Amino acid sequence: MARPLIDNATARRLFLSRHGLATAPNGAARGDALAGVIQDLGFVQVDSVNTVARAHDMILWSRRQAYKPASLRWLNDRKRAVFEHWTHDASVLPVAFFPHWRLKFARDAARLRERWKNWHGSAFHAEIDRVLAHISDHGPVGSGDLADKRPEKSTGWWDWHPSKTALEYLWRSGELSVSRREGFRKIYDLSERVIPPEALNAGHPAEETIDWACAGALDRLGFATSGELAAFWDLVQPDEAKKWVAEALESGRVIQADIALASGGLRCVILRPEVMDGLTDLPAVAPRLRILSPFDPVLRDRNRAERLFGFHYRIEIFVPEAKRRYGYYVFPVMEGDRMIGRIDMKCDRNAGGLDVSAFWPERGVKTGRGRIRRLEAELERVARFTGCADIRFAPGWLRVS
Image (cartoon, rainbow, N blue to C red; front, side, top):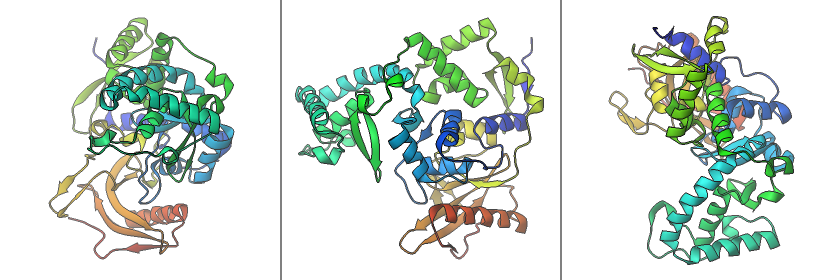
């Protein structure tokens, strides 16, 4: 039997609706409403880059433009409705997911214990015990509070002082949690003093967590391959996701379909039967122009973004007509269900201005007055969000080839 075909426009509409970008970014943006946005997304990536705004703040602002960064801090630091841990990178997750993260704690602990033992020798275990005892007796700490001598010879990314390594290991293995951040510095405490008891004391067998993770990833993506299910949380192994897909197909929980790609090809994916049945009822994507974080969930998988939107978004792309390279920290611009360009901008916090260096429209995208007005309106919203009093455009900022 031939697989059903989902045209590219419908696939983009479904994908954006599952990522909270199909409707206008209105609505409440604190307390339970904000927790609901994070629940719907599954997680929000945390990143230190702050040229305009932190990644997690911009991701949430793109979906609720009433959002204020203090609202997320309150959810984590006071209400404890979310916790910070690792997916493919550091992320904020609903605290209800904590019991399922025990599988990741165990797997990360085994992997990191062996790796760090080889680098730091037998003293590694003693340092873990020392750091854990210090926090138990004296309360939350940051890595700078336990500073000690760094190795004389660089060992690359893991060239941390021993107490920093111990803190990271204890966090990744679940014994410590991020109580709060000061600036962007993580402050660690015992998980039992951070995670609410109902989440801390719950647990699930590995097979339940694998089912939860694969099903939850599919619900948030709308459609996926087994590899995309495994990569979503980075919680299950690729072979575990493949097995889940095979069993879900056998039981009828999911079906296969072909997605039409922006390039004109097809890609076989799975989705739930009820999602397939509801495709004709999907609302149109709001035509609003949005500036997204480079870490936005719709762009996290760069290959998928290219297949679905025809948007080649990579680090260090050389653009001959622009005579420069741009990539990770140049902001994607989306209008409706299309990626229409990328913009280079930065907040000058000393002068209080938003500096716009360049906007590169995608090939075939026209930059008429209406579109430029919509872009300027979004830049004004970005400026208000970041506290910039004005927008300063560099000469020749509109890079039309």
